[in-house]
Image (cartoon, rainbow, N blue to C red):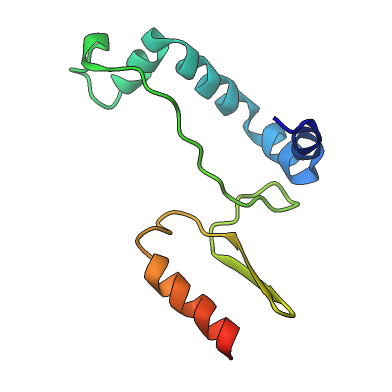
Length: 112
């Protein structure tokens, strides 16, 4: 863990705004990740027949997504070009299924 990165993330104005707007949801998500019973109870609202024994613990995934200064998630692709460098700053889901088109677009930027 890079403490400088953690500090910069936690003090980023967009993150602070996101947390201020969504803290209750965040607490609930953390609670459901720590408590299988709470997770099952929430899941039963969608699939009433589900039981704890139907589920198997697994590590959580991380979905990287760019966050604006206003605290809103950037829902679109962000590709920035500066001199001879092209940065893909945000490629939200379904980036994997769009990867060939993204690659073509980046190649066009590089060539032209």
